[in-house]
Length: 534
Image 1 (spheres, helix red, strand yellow):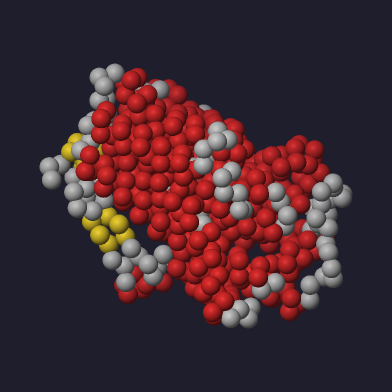
Image 2 (tube, rainbow, N blue to C red):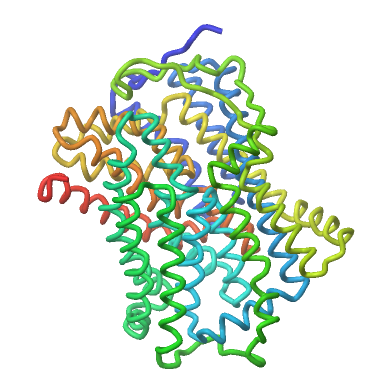
């Protein structure tokens, strides 16, 4: 096929072209925000709108648009859907074998305060899974754990999404920043250090924000010493490791530090009893019961972390990691200046790394956990099939969401929106940060947002006269606050909490928090650009 160059002003008016590119987002989020449209129908409607804009407004050849949608749908099922399926399988095994009840007892004996249970699980424990695996794993795990502690489904979903923000830029062993370095050519350690000067401020804020969202400022005042311990013991290692080591182990070290410090602190300090606390029930678990309770999650942590290390991942990829260049799309869509410095073809490759994928590691951990807990293999097979049937609608939704995101990317709709942000001049550090937020909201991934907008950030920063490293890093730091409103994460949270059909309510719950936190990141980047001259 003949290469096709993206067009960034197809209607001859930047305003009209921007409004056209915005239409699929309005359709998707507008339908999700209503009470009457299920998530998979909203996703399919948004996908239809994106295809219509791509073909009839921008002029993308219809076969190319269809192939981009198919590639996105494939990515939605693998690796995203694969992760979700296996996490929920592990959760159901834990419940059926009685380990989850023991886990609840162990947590409630550590603290009966639901606010501190929330911080320990959603913020500290979730950050570990973000650092080790990313891509939906932390939200799926923590939301399921909160449901087990009798949080309401909407609360469990929304609060898990709010908590899974500050660690995202360093998620999956630094994958977002490694991808950002790849598309910008900037020094990886410089990018890591810059994000390390942006996000620790918000690592301090998020625990307080999380409890304010759950229990108001009265609740914050009651437990602020523990929130300070969790935040400081996350933020300080995050800054040190990002600045002096690099992006790979930032979240893992910070999360372990935060969990350990908070657990030790709660041995010597407890808040006054609050309404709605989940008091300890039954006797304190014995050592053997504690081992049984935490066995599934310990195995998950160890296996997922090992699966994500370069050595293990490289070995598994060498065994089997086929990739497929999409015919009629690979390198045939040309991304054009000023989005990139020189016109270049967009790769379109589906990597079926079924052995090294995080979801495969989770499946392996689930099988080990099931055997350790005494589950019969035949019952495990039946339970896996039941889990697959249960999340079928969610897998359809995720596939449609990712198809929409890929059509947006390959048609250039994302770049049209990005260029609108780039015309903000002096205010570009703020709006460039918001561009990262929009990118993650559209694609569901800080990595994808960095790939989409990293070059644009560098080119525009040079034109505006601010640091390219600052703005490339701001794309990732701003993007972390978009993680809580991207449709993929919302569907994962809804599925993990059995709140399928409530995606619109989850979006309404978290949207204002996402926008407010992203705006604060933008203001901090403005200060770095013009006051601190980072």
